[in-house]
Image (cartoon, rainbow, N blue to C red; front, side, top):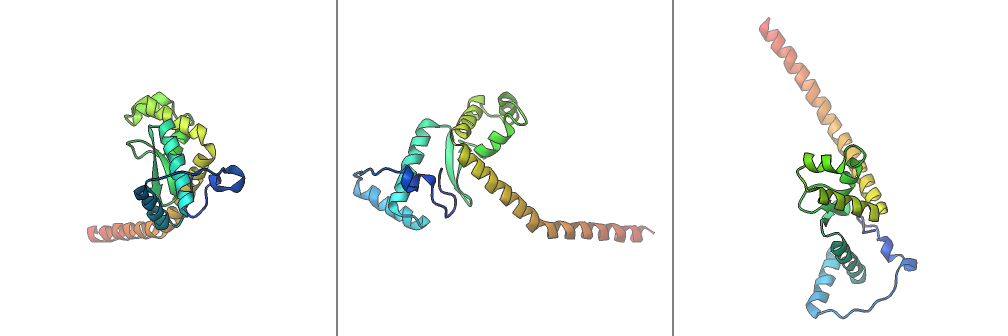
Length: 165
């Protein structure tokens, strides 16, 4: 599982790791150190994450891993579709072919998203849970504005009625 916000990845738990020494060009080493400092991680943690992501990209070339407010999230390459969303829609609400046709995607990309979701179920469930929490938060933030808009539209409708009389 990749890092989510400030949480550490499962891959960094001591019982799930093994030591591997790598020789890197000095420029690559500096790049890893700068990126690690930017995100508040140790270079070794970031290096392990980058290697894992590289292996995932090799195994799932039609999936992009993007930095979001919730951490790294898998997306169908070249689209704005998060893998967790595709995995919820297919087969829950539509077939691979119907989804591909509806959203003008090759069916193979949809299948790749489903394969990725199957391979990394814990990550996809975590992404789905983060998205649901965010959706509820946005609804709470928007509720006062929606209520105000309804009140304004009711007031305007009454004003127009009075003007007509």
